[in-house]
Length: 285
Length: 250
Image (cartoon, rainbow over all chains, first blue to last red; front, side):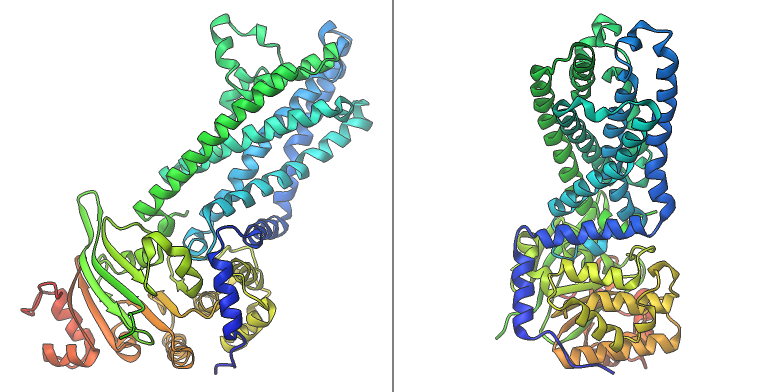
C-alpha cells in the first residue's frame, strides 16, 4: 500500500533548516499564492473588486460634468471629485484587501492548519499586505483608465504627488486593516462587519470632498490626526494651486508610522491572546 | 537512555474558572503510537493543541524532541504535523493547490513528486483537481491525512483521525497509519474516543477524565486491571466512576 519514500535524510535536513529560518520569502509566496488561487477560483469576486470603484467613478464623473457648468469650485479643477473618489476608494480597498484575505482564513477554519506549519505570523501579514496591493490594483486601475476616455480626466496627470498620496493611503489602509484583523481575532466572527464599516466612520473627518475649513473649528484638530486628511488637502493643493505640500506628506507619513505600529501591536497582541484562549483551533464560521 | 519524543510535566490549562487540563504529565517514546482517551471535555484536544503550540498553557512544561515547545516551537514544527476534524482546508482550492501550498510552507523539496507519491499511497489521485469543498467526509479524511504526511513527520498528532468515517474507510485509515509508523519509525499521538481504534493502533494509553490522567498503560494492561473484556468497557467503567482507581496517576 505504501510507496517508497522520496524524502531522503538530506531533504529532511533541508526542510528542517528552512522551517527554522526566522523569515522565508518562500512561505510568504506560498500564502500569497493561496490568496491568488482563491481569487482566481471565483470570477464573481474578481468582478466585485472592479464593480464598486468603477460605479463610483461613473457617478462622480457625471456629477462633475454637471457641476462644471454650475459650480465655480468644480470649474476651477474639473477632476477634484473624481480624484477624491478614486483616492478614497484606494484607502478603502487597501484596508478591505487586507481584511478580506484575513477573513478567508476564518471562513475556511484554516488557522489551526496554518500555524502548525513553520509559517510565522509576520510572514502571513506580509502576504496579506501584498495581496492588498494586488486587490487595489485590480480594482482601481481599470476605473482610473476608464475615466480617461469617458471624462477626459486622467488622475495620472497628477504625476509624482499621486504616488505620494497612494503610499500614504495604502499605509493607512493597512494600519486600519491590521487593527480590524486584531479585533476579529479577539472578538471572533461577530466582529466581521468591522471590515466593511469602520472606514466610513473616518470619511467625514478625512475631508474627501470638501476642504478642511468646512468642518467646525473644534473638529479640525481631530481631522488633522488622520493621514487621509493630509492627502485630500494635499490633493486639492495640487489641483487648485499646482503645489505639492511636502509638509502635508511628511506629517501624513509620520502619522502612518504611528498607526501602523499601533495596528501591528493590536494584531500581534490579539494573536497571542488567541493562542492563550485556544481560538486558533476553534475560530471559524 | 534516549529522551522521549514527547515529555509533558504538570501541564495545566485554565479558562477562567474552568480547568481544561489539570496537572497532567506523560512521556511518549520514539516509534510508539500512544492515545489520549476520554470523553468529551476530558482535555484531549486541549493537550494536543498545547503540544502543537496553538494554545498556551497556564502552567507546566512541554518538551518535544527535547525542545521546549513554548519557547522554541519553530525548531520542532518542521518535524511534526497534525490532522483534526476541527480544522479544514479552503473549500474553493483544489486538493492539489491545497497540498502544494502546505508543501511550500514546509519548504519541501520536489513538491510535485511528493504530492504524487502521497496521492498514490492514499488513493486520492482522482481527487487532486477537485475543490476540497466538494469531497465526501471519507475523501476529506484521506486528503487531511495527505496534508499531515506531506513533510513525512517524525511526530504525528491526530485528533479523532477516523471521526465521521464509515467502517471500511476507518479501517483503511488505521491500516495506513500502522504502515506509516512501521515504515518511518514515527511517533504517533492520537486523541480519540474510538476504543477499537485505540486497541488496534496503540501500545500506550492515557485515560483522561475532567482534565486529569486517571489511568494509563497498554490496552491489555488496562483491560486486565479493570477485569473487563475490552477497552470500551474500561472506558465506561472510568467514565461512570465504577472503578476505585480514579486518582491521577503520576
